[in-house]
Length: 166
Image (spheres, rainbow, N blue to C red):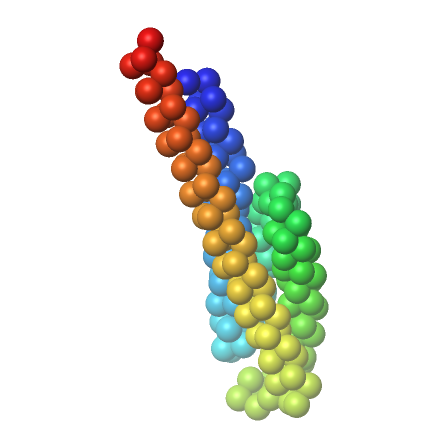
């Protein structure tokens, strides 16, 4: 019974919480994308400032969630994907900052410079890459949790058989 309890605790702390942190980081990435779009559509400096603050808050939350999730991904493949996701998120942030700086220089947002269009495209590419990596990392955690669940089922069946035999 102790083994079943230990495995259930392990499943929660390693698998479920790792999954939760990655999914929450991905949600914050979506919030950042929405704030980026709202920034681009804003018609006043106050609106732009509010949307930029929301964007920064979302990206900071995503970074904090990734810090919590990092030690919960332990397979070599997951660690590699995690490192790639972090690098891509940093590149996304850089492209996004470039795009927002260029957009802030335009008085009218109905016209876009070539540099702004490129920065937005680069940010979108990195955002999609991070989203895909987060999705794959989530699937890995779901698979690991399923294996942990199968192990607790096995332990239960073995324990039940032993208890009946006794």
